[in-house]
Image (cartoon, rainbow over all chains, first blue to last red; front, top):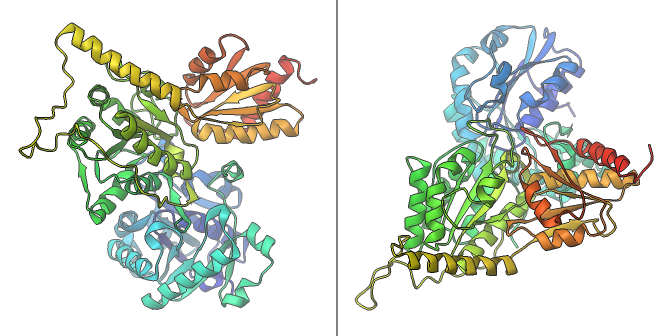
Length: 241
Length: 356
């Protein structure tokens, strides 16, 4: 089976409802792209933090990590990175036009967050891009296939951009089990059917994959992306009763 | 029990309020608690309730005052500067003996501060905040599940004692995501024969007020309030202990800081230092007797807070000078466990619990 990233072009737009895991997914994807073979003419990977909704656990928290792996992190400059202002880093439009840059745009939560992307829609016009909605069916507003489809419609309307893929991210954080992943993934597959979109891949925490030793890619016929958690401190899970 | 789901702290507060029978919410948005409002704006109409975004926090708290007087189970939520604006109303609600739940998802301060996690509103809510002689029950959850459980408990205590109850969180707890199960138990019953629900041609008028012009009436009123507070102090002190039985160093921390402190205590134990954690769950009434007992064998007590040192004063009052009390504190962030562990190790050397 193809790897998840080989299905994607130069410009990748990651969206999803608030708390869907899109920022962790974007980070992991950007790091994988930077570590893998350079695609087409792209010489550099850049991750743009467009999350104007959620002021915490944002891509900008991982700036040092990204830069140490050769990923350019485009975040609001200076003190503004710590603010709850509807702003994003400079030069995004130029990056969209630059054929040497493989671009991951991490767009803020739900329909409101996607409004930020709407501002970029004119810049993206004429460029081919992969719109991905990350879905965790264990989050309150995306628990059923119908709710996921409604969320996708809202995001597309607000952002004025089209989705091409759903990324399945079924998890209950540290309480994730193999059964949780299987049941949740089935909900995402059903949502994808309703929307007429393919499922790009299945995201599962690396430590669970190591523990379970199950070939989910073959079983579920979907590329599996092992995920590392970067935006939440490890002690939080260690002290969860 | 319902199915487990993954929730952010702010969403969890909102859903817990609905599960506890709250149908009315008045508030004003502020980072980092705006999702409480957003969630309730979406959800309350679905369950036959009402959400009103007031023109200010001053207005919101007075709407809470009015709704509680009229018999409604009601809540508001804000973050530090917004809670400051509500203080006058909180004093009125306490004086009028009204059940109401207040949620403070604290942010960096003083002044406009920032949107960082903080615990620096301890003095404000635990020691007063508004004018006059009153007390506020203050609950300090430390996980998203506890935000749910304590929000439900807050409605119960408010109803039982006819008094405002505050739930304390911080920017990190409001925003972090953890697996939770929502309660499916029946809400604590609303029984308010004193409420201003209309005479219906039967009884005399119910009047909710806070004005006592004759001096003796005001004194009697305060005596009645404080008899009730004494009962709350007797019945409602709550705390959790972790490895305190044989602890030489007892760390005292609440809320998110207690999670960090617990990880630090585990690191200390791995290094042969007998450390333990005492976690106040009610900040008022402060579990002073339980702390004194937990620290009876200790050589040192260390308060750990995200403030310049506020709870440490209650720790000192509880310990009564029997054991030295020290403070670990940071501002603007939730520290990592190794910072507290290093401090425990340094203190352990100084009180000669370990060599080197």
